[in-house]
Length: 253
Image: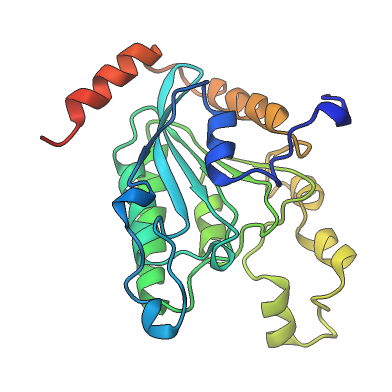
């Protein structure tokens, strides 16, 4: 275990910091970064300020020498909700993945402002996970403040493994939705101990709904992620230089 004073918190890290810490050092290459301005065209009409990456970071990296897809959902932007653009980014990078993928999920699910478009996007993500899992591991990490709810909880459940921390929460419906639909007698959304007792990482691992419980520490999460990939058949391992050459060959001309 990492001494508390030396831990680097996953919760307190940004999506890009999380990917960089979990992947092999210096190997992450982002695709469609904020300079590509892939933001939602629907939010401004509803008075919502868009984010240039639509709250989703995607790219490719090495993980223990494997050429994998890397995805991180930004829970700070509209609760990590998934709309058309962010969902398309995730689905496309999974479809192009070679030796697997890891998904850092901090999301409330479908973006209400985009309704059916978000629903279709999550369906594409689920299809891509199932197709990739036939030949390579797809590992979900649920360790952020928002948790993983709604349609993206279905996507996480389709992954080869789910890694959680005690901070993470995982379920089909968030506490506010349960309270609204079933009443405060069923669940008080302000009752934090009850929420974690029902959907927290410790509980989900005990129930078998998640596979591994790790403390809120980037180094420990990185080890758990590599262990998850090592549990699957060995595939092509790449050096950082070979990965860069491959990127150069695949770049649009």
